[in-house]
Amino acid sequence: MPNQREKAPDAAKTKRRGDNKLVFAVPSLLTTGNIFCGFYSITESLLGSQALSLHDITSATEHFDRAAINIGFAYLFDALDGRIARMTGATTEFGVELDSIADVASFGIAPALLAFAWGYGTIPQLHRIAWAVSFVFVVSGALRLARFNVQARRPSQNLPLKNPKIDKKAFVGMPIPAGAALLAAIVHFWPVPLIASDLSFSLGGRTIGIDSMALGIGLLILMACLALLMVSTIRYSSFKGVGAGKYHPRVLVLALTLVVVAIWFYSRWTLLILSVTYVSHGVVSKAWSLLRAWRKGGSTDHSRLELDEPHRSH
Image: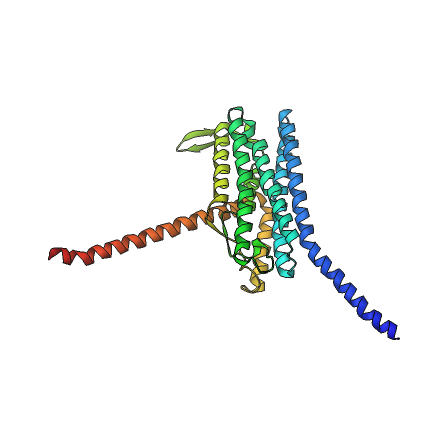
């Protein structure tokens, strides 16, 4: 009997230890899923480029669409691993480093290669600058992650390690997944390679055409702007405050249901609108704050002139 009583606590401790290991493993497993989706996206981009070289536009379109979709799934895994790590308190130094490496692969290399293979890299006149812009995009994403991790840990060197993604209410610089998500949403919306895309529309009774060269230049400018936004100091919301503690669970469930339904039935439009809204909201907020500061400064100077005017009359 005493032996059985002693074995019971030991068995409970062993079970708790196993449960703790499982809890700490879940975020890393999700990060592994993130890496898998990034790798899958890279292989699909390469297959799309190969099909395009054989002039098989239909096959290339399918490969590029799958590459974009896998970047979207990588985004989902990346969001879940940080949220679950926060909820369970399962943040580890190993997990943080693994997450940063996964982000460079899935949201740096994968979208840069997709933009090159699907977009501007297929246009001979833009080949050299296309290579450079894709490389700058990857480097900017890596610099953004490195700066972010350093800034998040600097204020609390003596405190336990925290996950930088969940300790900030606002990100400094556009998060690298947001730039990748915008590129993936664009490709998912129009998966036909740019070299085979010629758009035309009517305006005022006139037909205006946009050839692949113009589209490639536009994509080059977009990727360069995304790279600059990642290394900028513009603030982007981290949505840390979004949760059951701030909003009623029914409201959250309803909102989440509407988003899921919209993505399921209208994925091309919904994902494009969501990604464009998030990427642009930081720029719009910064411009609005600068405009308010300029107006406030102008009104202050005007009031000073009115106060100084009586003194000048004397």
